[in-house]
Amino acid sequence: MDLDKINLGKKLYYKEETGSTNNDAFECETAADGCVFVAETQTGGKGSRGRDWNSEKNVGIWMSILLYPKLPASDIAKVTLTAGMAVCTVLRNAGYNALIKWPNDIVTDGKKVCGILTEKRAEKVVVGIGINVNTESFAQELKDKATSLFISGGKKVEREPLINLIYAEFERLYGILKDKGFSELRPKYAELSATLGKKIKVIQPNESYEAKAIGITNNGELLILHDNKEEVLCSGEVSVRGIYGYI
Ligand code: BTN
Image 1: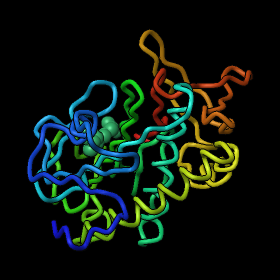
Image 2 (image 1 turned 180 degrees about the vertical axis):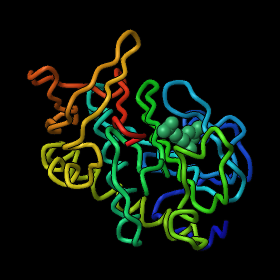
Image 3 (image 1 turned 60 degrees about the vertical axis):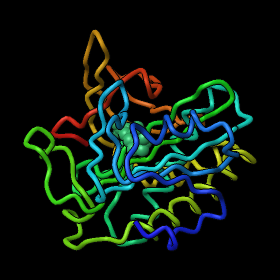
Image 4 (image 1 turned 120 degrees about the horizontal axis):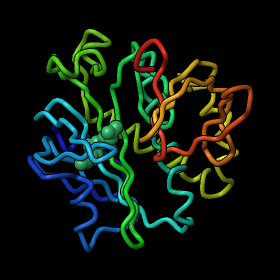
């Protein structure tokens, strides 16, 4: 990565190799609000629900934004949704047909191109963003679900400008979230959603059922129609799949 091309207006902490940029952000005692941690590869990249996150060397964006938000813990999920909107918007502006699979997977061509893991420890919140940029192929078990910008768009992509744009868009949207709340971002989130209006499968630890996704609440929850009744799903508690595939 050419660090001279990265311009965030905030300090950048860069490593060739690290365990996890999210952990780096938590462990750095001197980093201020808004600092960014980037690595070329992660040996212990963390995905959501305790899964590993494949972080192949030099071909992805593995970045974490450190925040000291003055938001109640219950609002942290909204920060993740905001980061998803930032990535999705930047990718769409770059010509990709990106959408958000609720709550915060970014998909192109029906496959996941970006995942976001937000974690909180004490007063720190870390928003970890993983984007498959120039990955040429995926292991057999991921092929049906994962893609990269290279696979989707057919050409290699410079990562540094994307990092700059995503950071700037996140800062802008996060400012709106802090000042006005998620209700202000909700219409835009809904516009970017691949989930709304779809029949979905709701997967919980002890049951799965079919429903229809009909809305997003001002808290960022998914409003569904299940057995003719409206219900609200919180991210973190459930997993949602399309009936006919990943989205
Ligand atoms: C998901 O499973 O969808 C979330 C993936 C989040 C991956 C990113 S890569 C940068 C940051 N560091 C980590 O260890 N994980 C996040």
